[in-house]
Image 1 (cartoon, rainbow, N blue to C red):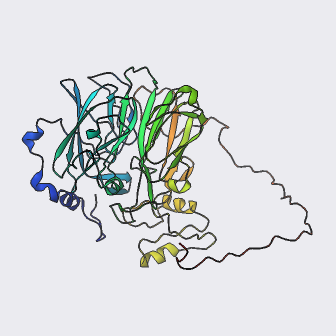
Image 2: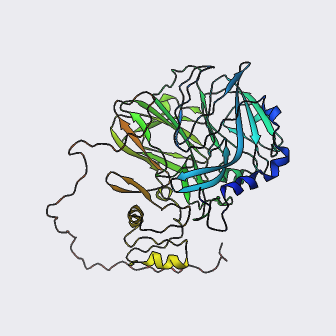
Image 3: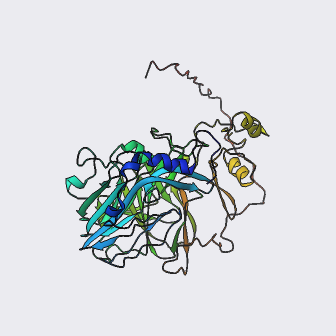
Length: 468
């Protein structure tokens, strides 16, 4: 990573030095750690292969979008994991990295996969500069293992390791996150997914099973660290701390049964929409939805703190969009305070104003799409460590999307564990929208009437905040 030029940024070395300064004297002893499960970390931001179990009860593993699953060890019949809460550097998309907090080298942390009835022991080592805890969101467990610092347990001090142990009683999709300085720690990316598989691997079996979390960040252009007191005005809406075009596609075989599990740890709801297919909501963090209670959808709204599992048959070949249907959630940074400049000629405007205001970016003369076109031609200057609002390129040009957007790629003949991007879909001849080159008829308008025209109403906005 290049050394930031702005004085408000710090280098990678300084970042970890500052984060670790308060734990230097209380770091976990190596001899003590020898009795713990190995610390496994990952730095890559791409989707990793599923983790097939080589011991313990059998299950059908999930695939974490732009993530991975945490290995475990079996010890006297107990499945042991080791989570390390620590500062991490997460690539949001090529060209932008963020200084976050996460687990085992990534944010979100690795997915934890267990089987219903497993006895689970999780060692949590705190390498953050402040105390933390882990709440196992949605789980049935002893009250003292629920992870609410001060209420059900002492907080985990920096440099210390605490142990959580409980039985995974209920199959389903869950999350884990801190309940200690929660607003700061979750705003910094401290979270992860949890899947408890059913005892019977054939129950609710699917061919491909994906999981990811919805999270959001407020990172100013040119900065590397999120603001932690933002409530709603986030500028990066992410799938597993990645934004389009940095989000991997969901690659599936034609006619396979597919499940996508989505958890929401942002501060607003997200209507998640799939193109080209109908699905059913088959699970929540409260359990599986009985077949009699399901209905077909193409969009499901996921509220804050909820999990949803959707299932469908991928019976239509193609590259199908999969995204949040809030339009400003499919955009990247700098989207809030940009004035509407439609109709205003802006030749050389960005360069001239940018000489005075390095973080300035104007909305395009004809609309926002102009910005993605400019970015694709490498003509748009950007502040350091920032992405265009809309970016990404498909086989037909610029894809005017960012943020919470990816594709479901349905293909034929994929190998069992092949999740690699197969490239653009080759459409059959005559199946792509095309330009009409014939004559366009004149516009037909209703005849004029003598009725009195509508009264124009002028509204004057109150000044000040006295009415609030």
